[in-house]
Amino acid sequence: MSTASGHTEVELTWLEGRIEQWIRFGRVAADRVVNRRTRIATFRPGAVFGLVRWTSNDFGTVHSSIAVLAAVDPGAPYSTHPFVRPGGDLLLRIDGWPKVQRALEAIDAIEGTGIDPCDVAPDHWRHVGSQLAAGLPFRPYGPDRHAAWLRRRALES
Image 1 (tube, rainbow, N blue to C red):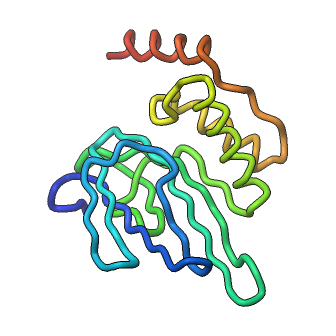
Image 2 (image 1 turned 180 degrees about the vertical axis):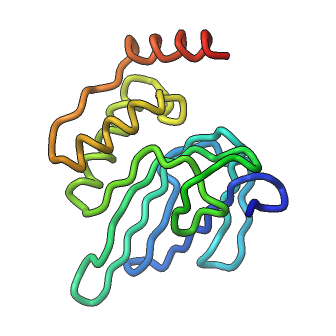
């Protein structure tokens, strides 16, 4: 099942202090407001984006997660993910606020080097996800690693 446009759509809901879903990074191709609390962000095939989801109730945080996904080409295999239609290539998924916070810090560190997180090597996101899930430190991503990724990508295309 794919969207009519062949793009990946992400439904984002924002009810302050209750349900907050936002795109942490990514190049949004189109943005459609459904109502004052919901919008749909659309990504072209191949676009990488970070989706943060947080939910609370009267007693505190119920759920928090971050996922880094790559939008897929129409007809390509994909992983399903909540609020992402049809789904995407899941590069990282972390649940639980302490680990989500570490993933957000990793994104901040990448941005601090002047690199856009959407351009980071997919293998790095997988590495960060597996290390965080295991409670282990992960390698930093900097200009040298990024240059190596760009050379590898040029060879593969």
